[in-house]
View 1 (cartoon, rainbow, N blue to C red):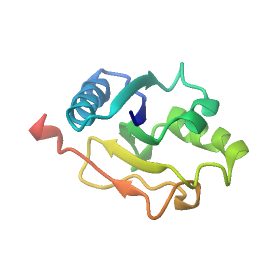
View 2: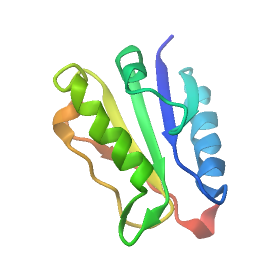
View 3: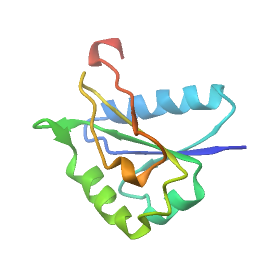
View 4: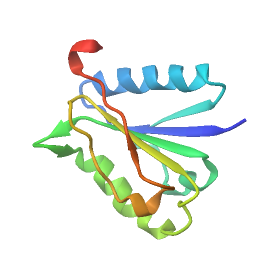
Length: 117
């Protein structure tokens, strides 16, 4: 069974709620979701996942520093993640971008309007 790692940062609990909803959707598709708060996730876990979804609130138009730091640390696996599928979710109508060179094809973005949750 395919495994998708869902890594998120949530200060108020809203992004955590969304991460759980994303995990439910992933599970319905027959894929095993693995939920991790960014504070407990290791960049080495990226190697064993078939895909990764990042969840972050938006601060001043960009992702949370904790997610950015995790992505910066993942550079040690540069070139080893290009067979993975990467996705982001956040609480605003604009996508977060991160280097598509890390993941297969183009990075796919998903976001949920805060009024729909």
